[in-house]
Image 1 (cartoon, one colour):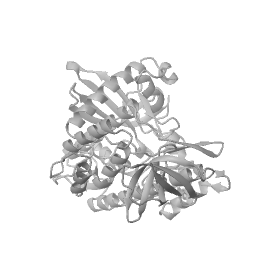
Image 2: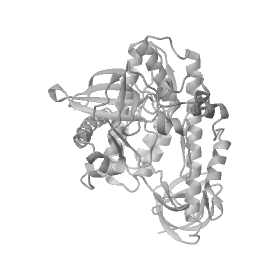
Image 3: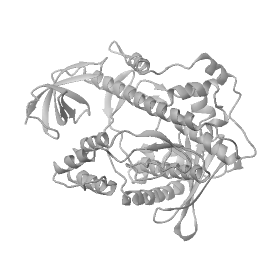
Image 4: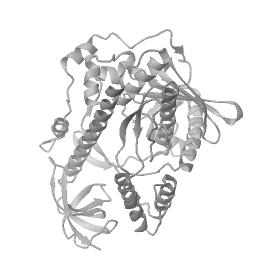
Length: 485
């Protein structure tokens, strides 16, 4: 994609290489995929094809990892099933495709190009839960009480069929009464009632997690809008009831999966955010806003503080959220062996958590799927303990690298969008002050840049007016002059 002489595709590809990724699939992996005749089949798996399965994802997503369905149960409870694409049925361990996936560990999504973990013939076709196609899946089955508690659960394999491919934006608008019923939903009789039921259950799950201290954060990550090869806007993708529905179902499914393996004395490949070591800094941040947090890490107290701040100052809440995220520390993958005490996920307020619901996009999910299938079959462990430990460290490092690639390309897109607006003035909020400089986020478009002149006396949270001085698209630099007002 070339825009005004700037090739954003080249920038994205070079960012991949600079961060140690292999942006193209090796020849042996492509040969493996070319030899495939079709999706995996297994008549011995349960037949659940007639259930009203539906996917909810981004509008342009084709690598569909999960489907959901629900039904009323006794006593006001609801039985939820999450179907996860059985990628392992085609991508065998140590095959060429698996070796490439293991090296990259994740798909990388940039505005100009997606660098998929698996070749597209797999991730968007043969291992995708594509609409109206029969596919193999691992089913995570759990019963949710009306108080949001999980009463019972099971895991097994089945054949499924996606009855409706839905998108977050249109489903969220419909649930809120702000938009029409999406066409794929209208074409699949009964799916509308399904999504209403799932929305009700998701809200119960969310309430229970928040009662236990789950954090509701809002971090701005604007998405570049590209039209005819031009970056024409940056838009913040808003969370809505559809995104929250899927988030809450996936959190529940990941917890069920962790406990399933743990109960069978299998190791778990956990996703954790440890109790924050920089809690004192979070307390200082709260004190600066006139609030007091307890001396020791307390997810519930932090959650209630964030709820109050969102209500009191919604404009600055994304910047407060970003500060809290940085102070909480990064998520990481760790291995918990049977009988060992485990670390939970501080931000989600859950003690048992793995990544299991996106095996087309993340290698940790494929590792967990192989562990689950071995447990189901009574087969030996597919990975030794020391191998899992090394994989956990590698997956954490590669995820960090992928985030840096995506952030770099977002910054280049923002710089390109503003390249014709040198000298214009923008309203903004100071988001960072340190020895390295002062940073401002403009309100429209939502971009962040450095204040190179006029920064004296500025502090985080100050409203300011800035003038765009220069941009560097290759490096993603945006520089402003500031004048407080």
